[in-house]
Image 1 (cartoon, rainbow, N blue to C red):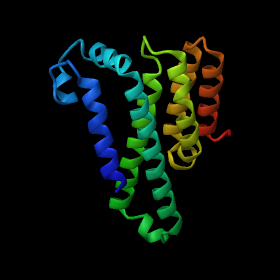
Image 2 (cartoon, helix red, strand yellow):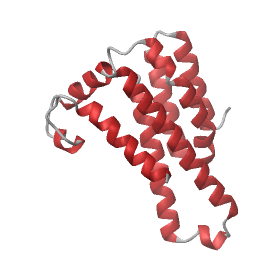
Image 3 (cartoon, one colour):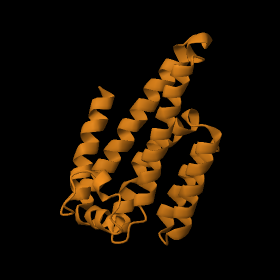
Image 4 (cartoon, rainbow, N blue to C red):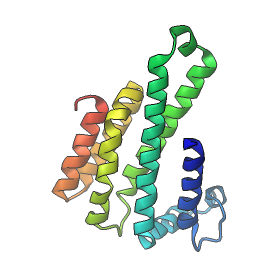
Length: 174
């Protein structure tokens, strides 16, 4: 059920990102040197919708992480050690990392307001403790570095503090 919601949300977000590009999926933009500019213009053009989409992605990803953590806490060690299970968990971790990183990267898009950026902070703060319990050490460090770089690049003191706190929480420093 969560997967279906995630896929549906991704489809809707993709429609906004691709509006006016002539592409029907992101892969079609792979060889377009202006792809990032086109998508970023749409993020700004449809900022309210994209904000809702990014918040939704974080909310659903948080629910997925919580479900996996619950499953992990009730498994026998021999079940958790199975290679196919470990591979699945690694895939979910990587997906979580990509999702959250893309939201943080989107905060840097020129043309978005600081109010829009600050509106993303509650969803980021909500997922941070789950990421701290779920991601591998290297993945946590990657997110902390990304959040720190974004914090360093902003002049907004509230955004700077929140991104720094997010990175610290993800890294396990609360």
